[in-house]
Image (cartoon, rainbow, N blue to C red; front, side):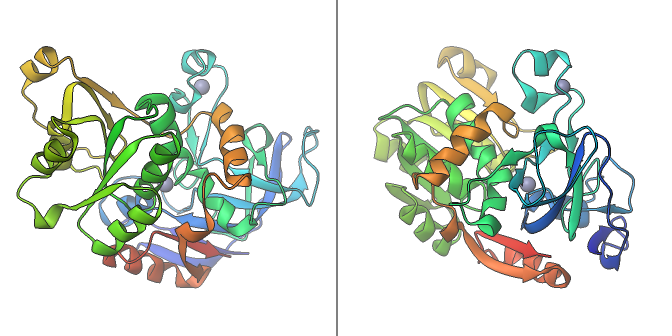
Length: 340
Ligand SMILES: [Zn+2]
Ligand SMILES: [Zn+2]
């Protein structure tokens, strides 16, 4: 089969012929319908963030597909079923899994990071992590639920805890951020979306943002937010992973408000500690999504409350994968998917 194999930052990605994986006892093999192209892949390819498994490794962690083979111990899936593979697989027995917080599992395994991912025609995964998809959801577009929709779902619902009437500022309107906008609006939030690309701000408005701010055209985003909200937003969500933006997001939060950090950076940020105390600020992180959140999320997509079709702006064949990263750089895509 064809697969996009990462050989480390010097060589990068190569489309190669590799063996089709076989199903272990508790695994299924999924024929990949589509795999979303995520900014995380760029971290490995361009920014020197190491993958857990030493390359070569097949990248891709946002996949949907059809069950092609079933391991001897699997009773829950049949060949031909449509499925979604969560980006991160959990152990189920560590202390965090047992607390119901599987998304911070101590033994988490990520596709295209710890194990071979889904920029390939087939991928083998443990059956226990896989979710069945209803036939009414378009199978290719459904792949983006696995990360671009599920990550902000957990952030908005469980970590930022957006309630009806909350004012919510979202920094970054890319593939994940646009869904933070959409989900915060669905949760009843009054959403202000922030980005530097006018096209993305247009999309944000069409996905439920009440207001948008082009950060490149204002002196301070926090000043604008304070004007719009009369003193600061109830909640700020940062989906970029830039320490300066995270600082600015915290500046946007009102007294007693909450900052939720979804973007990843390895760099330090600086905050005046006294502000956290004196303003009773809450700063929370958000990582991935718990397995139990996938079913209600799929239901919301099925009933049309959450839109996915319009989020997929670009489609590529496997050997066109480099083009998907180009459009990501240009800021002209919301989500690209690769169809092996
Ligand atoms: Zn991702
Ligand atoms: Zn665990």
